[in-house]
Amino acid sequence: MSSLPNKTRVLVLKESPARDSPLYHDIVIEERVIPTLKEGEILVKMGAVSYNRRELWMRRGLYPGIVLGVTLGADGAGMVVASADKDDSPLNKRVFLVPMKGWESSPDAPELISAFVIIGGTRLSGTFADYVVVERDGVIQTPDHLDDIHMAAWPLGGVTAWRATVVNAQVTKGQSVLVTGIGGGVALLAVQICVAKGVNVYVTSGSEDKIQKAIQLGARGGVNYKNREWSSQLAKLIEQNTGNGTPQLDAVIDSAGGDIMKQVNKILKPGGRVVVFGMTATPVIKFTMHEVLKHHRLIGSTMGSRKDLIDATEFLAEHQIVPVVSHVLEGLDSAEEGFELLKNGEQFGKVVIRMGNLKAKASL
Ligand SMILES: NC(=O)c1ccc[n+]([C@@H]2O[C@H](COP(=O)([O-])OP(=O)(O)OC[C@H]3O[C@@H](n4cnc5c(N)ncnc54)[C@H](OP(=O)(O)O)[C@@H]3O)[C@@H](O)[C@H]2O)c1
Image 1 (tube, rainbow, N blue to C red):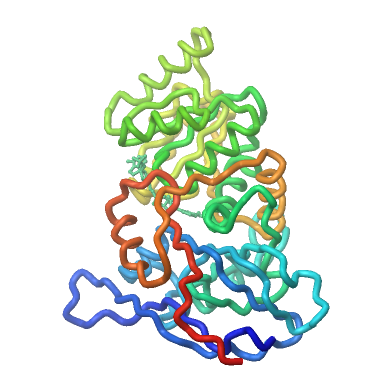
Image 2: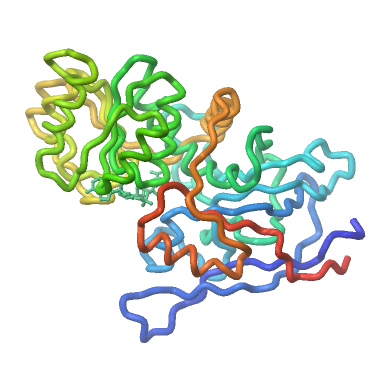
């Protein structure tokens, strides 16, 4: 233990000065004492951490359960450098943090929904730190094919994408599936999972460039949701690809909300599933008798269980999937730059901070 530090730098939210309108909390780097490890706890030296849009919502005060002063960040990967048990098996292993707590394996929803919490900026401390103390079951081993940068781009988005596509939409090889808003981190991982499963994936985006990038990842094609006629354009695209006069989608993975049910009504097969994990465009979805008559199923999907994350990570390893990273920033000092990138929304893939530029000096 002699080479380990007793302090770590952490990134936290600090209350915005009252004059800020609209509200935008500050972020500050603070130095914290690393507590003595209790039985069952390990110390992870973070190699990389990654943003989700939730951190931006937190700065705007628009996220449930924000606790100011608690380390931000749900995603991160690194190395186990200490354990309360000196012969512990995770020691010196490369791991990533489980981004949530309170959902073990129940197939429908968390065992106790009020106990479910995402780490970082909530009542649970997160990943944006040089060192993180966590319970042993709060980490999962990193697959060999990924470095910390790409591993950090996976956990929260990966478990959300897995549950939406595999558990809830039940996509299978040969099906045709639409993933909306491909610029989103979760949507992109959903495409990668679908492609690895042998699904014919179609996408929507507000950017032609992002559609082309999705095609390079294996999507069959895409249309621009800014065009009001996007669903008939999509029908033509599927028809061209399949040669089938009645183009049909088996499922839709959506993060836009609004009129998605109406848009896909004519191209979704009877009994087809629309799985919604976010509502970026409009926070309401209209569900009418037209959908009832086609037996369409609308399913809400949020994150996933620890079991879902383990299953998803095994799939990631088996198919050697590499999450798409858009920008790599250097050290916690560059955190503000990451928030600016998220605000601009031009990234394709995750924004990651490479850690390791430690200013806190080892003193144990
Ligand atoms: N339920 C969960 O567990 C969970 C987990 C993570 C995120 N979410 C939610 O899921 C959503 C996406 O989050 P994220 O972090 O993956 O992505 P994100 O970075 O917030 O990206 C959102 C994307 O939405 C797309 N978009 C914007 N307006 C749209 C519209 N009118 N129609 C279709 N797409 C549109 C854009 O795609 P283009 O750039 O391609 O135009 C944009 O890149 C958010 O609402 C977030 O709160 C939910």
